Image (cartoon, rainbow, N blue to C red; front, side, top):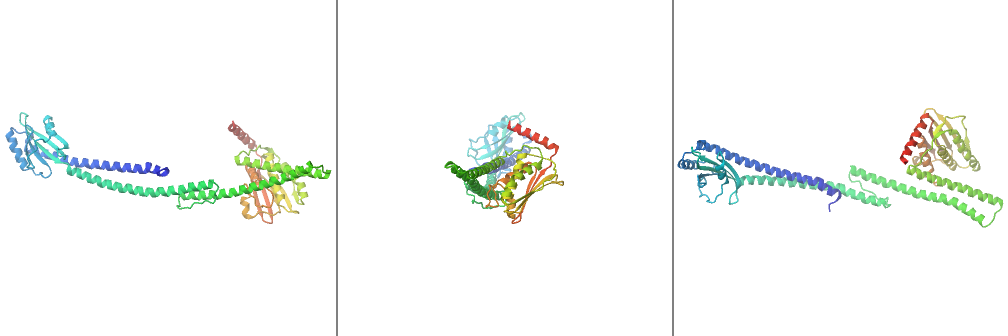
Length: 487
């Protein structure tokens, strides 16, 4: 019934509160009883002081004088309603009492026996009578000049009122304690429910989300940490739903991307298998097979790079390089394609540029990806321009690739570098190339920015820091740290 947070609250909080209140009630009861008993004891001490005036120095010469004086003291005793006064002879027998009743012959008087043995002739006793009543008694021995006992005077006070008062106080304290505990239990139960119920709902919702039900939602009931957690889980469900849709879309696109070249390769391979075609057909078939094989290789490499990106294993082999040579080589690779597609690829190469510190192959991969996208989304007769210049203000080399293609919608631009995202579903592509390119540029401490308008075109700006001498030292230190981690 009680488990988890409820169990911990009962043990750690409610249990401690109950224990503290119980301890306080016990301490209060003991204190009140001690106070009442001290008051009774003080009253008895006062009466003993009064006795010293009746028997100066607690002395009396003979038994007859003692009995006469003691009897008169009993008759004039003013506190008969609060305590009992007894006169005891030398043999320990009660001869006179202030109550007027015949004394009990079997009355136990431990205080009298102790007083006889005491040097001062005084003793105090707290205990129960044969009737079960609890009393406090004091006895003072009266001696003659020879220090012989001629009798004793005993005061007895019932502790019934003191015990009753202590009981009433304890009962009131217990009642108050029970009310406090009940209030704590009620408020604690409400508080625990306000935590446990939402947490259970979160647990159930999280299980549904884990099973793929991304439509599961939590109702925010409190504007506090629990409410914030509800918002976080709801946001997580939305993000997972979006990621799931993007993933499914990505799988669908990649499957299509793989199926198309595989179908072409298989078709031409079967054509060659069942008959030797003429030379023109053979060359065309081989050209298709080589082209589609390269396309498959590119898709697989893109997927491998994405896998490394996700696992944090995308590493750079940096060195001092001529960025113009890499841009020029990437542009040269696409000149023939641009010509065959009826598009214009313009590049005005600068005479010289400062070197950059980076991974030659990875940067070329970025340039190829950006140029491929620019040509892919540019219609026949369109233009793609490439420009390289030095930005002295930012101390960077800027590579700009601009086209006058279909462009990107304003709402899609913030997501265009996200993994799996693809703004234009009509054009082939996996949707991860730009995400990988952006990560590569970030690993070079640069930036990749996209500016686009629908039906106007797209401009991609790549910024790379200019080479500095300390770059190689930093890379060497980083390589050494990576080597140590691998070991």
